[in-house]
Amino acid sequence: MIQLKTMLNCIDNSGASIVECVANLRMKRHAKIGDRIIVVVQKHRSLGESGPGSGAASAAAANKVRRGDIRHAIVVRTAKKLQRKDGMVVRFDDNACVLINKAGEPIGTRVNGIVGAELRDKQWSKILSLAPMHL
Image: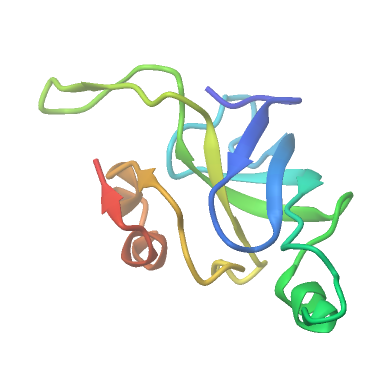
């Protein structure tokens, strides 16, 4: 159940760590797994120290998003219990999302962690193929 001001973990390698939901594109309803939301990056990942031997330019290029950026995202895990058609009840430990561009393609090239199998019903097969496992 993702609604306005909900904080989510970003589980791809786009550079964002924690994002905040600012709009739900499902109109008048809370977002579930597989729904598209609009988020603001609250905290981004630092990719190491910028010492003399490390490539600071490559670390800056690897971060595709910065703090304060407004992006679209897909919800891939929710802490709210979800009952599937076969009767199974699924609940994850946290709320998580994957950042996408306006065309619907993931910004990152990897997804770290498990995603919900409901993404298959919502036609997000690109995110499923990047994820190591889906439940």
